[in-house]
Length: 194
Image (cartoon, rainbow, N blue to C red; front, side):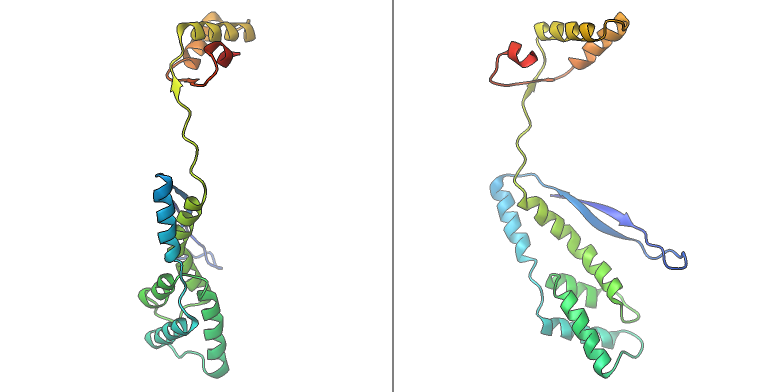
């Protein structure tokens, strides 16, 4: 699997540059159907969210580790409820990383936590989406054209471009028949050119 990442470089309300981060935007997958299915099962196991109680414990630990006085009473309860309901949408390891492994001086806003969670879980989601799609059909086998096929293509080019210089038509015919350009099929060679 090869995950494609792109950089994001946000700008604040006053035009100041905020810290950049990367996001996963696609994933290319190769391998047999069996290996793809096994990898999909494994990755889906890593999508298990933490319990709300565990997230609340991590939030409490984070509030002790960060500077400043946190909210009290009903404000604290609302904050914990709002954050835990949103964080329960992410895998447990991602949430734990966002809350306890990231270095926060102040208690983070939801936007900051969401950015970290999206950056950590995005590659996994792209891998799962790519593995869930059926494997692409194998590419068609191709072969070099025969001399008869080369002559037929040159005749078609001459017929379609009668006013073009002969050197241009020869160059176009050469380019059109270079390399392995004829698809192998069950039809005869004449049928493939018609």
